[in-house]
Length: 173
Image 1 (cartoon, one colour):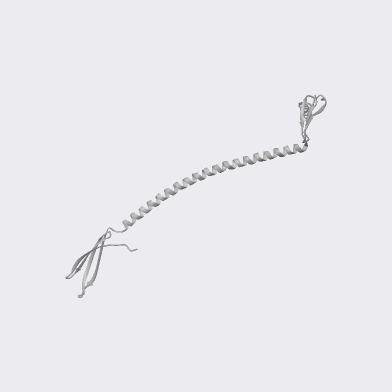
Image 2: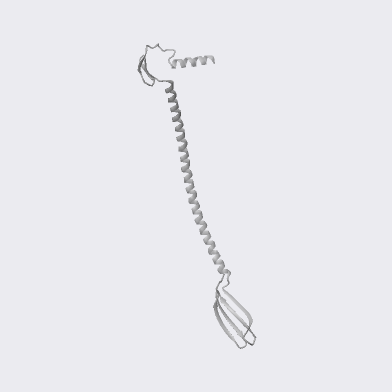
């Protein structure tokens, strides 16, 4: 295990050119910026050096950028779920309208059945009869009537009198 650690350490050092690095020449400042940053040349390479304050600001900006990207992703996912919800609600509303239309058709069918039942409930022919007295002699009189739906024909029969009446029945309530 110890040998493995040594090999890994040597590989890292070789990779970073620590073991085989040549001592570089001189270091000189090429340009100095007003915010404290420097353009530095070491050997044949040029580097840009920044202050800790600028580094902190850059890290803060990077963190703010990542936070904003996360918020945008969250809002995009919310918008897509809202769009899906709206589509589902539109489908539900359409289904409910179809259901209401079907229920109204069923209701109209039941109203038609009620009307037909009422027609069947009332008999087509009716027969009426009764006894009574007329005029001064108080002799008994009989009457009979025959009805077809709302129309009536009555006949009155007495010892010396008889008569016929025709009428129509009207509903009051």
